[in-house]
Length: 201
Image (tube, rainbow, N blue to C red; front, side):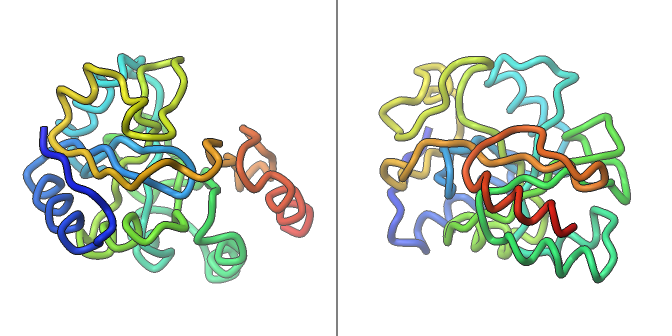
């Protein structure tokens, strides 16, 4: 396992890009909790993440993009919806959207999409050019870590890279919004904003 401290951005970014390109799994900071992920288009990476989390294989994983322009290649959304999504992003929200093409992160026709309000995440996705898996860096059903010190020992031992961005600010996961059904699937960070946004969707 390699450890890199963020900030500064560039050394952490170079390491994360190298591991993402080689099929590695990375623990990284986000605008909510610490994430666990890698190349969302690589089935082997998806399997590694599921194994590390001891998570049921039929449970989907979410992904994040640098912006909605990148997301256009992967999910279905018209210009009006893209503009609406931009009202809440970047931010602590996961949007369930229909896929254009299958992705190994889910067997469903829908996928959870994020654009985190976090410099490292946005820069990583932009430079990588593909979506990145985002799921909390904990064993299934256990408490998500708010800092590197709270990481499970096995996860810490078996991941390829840990990006230490210091403690997360509030330790609350993202609010998950089912966009087609116009409902909240999980209450989390930014809940009141999400409710107000849905009311106008």
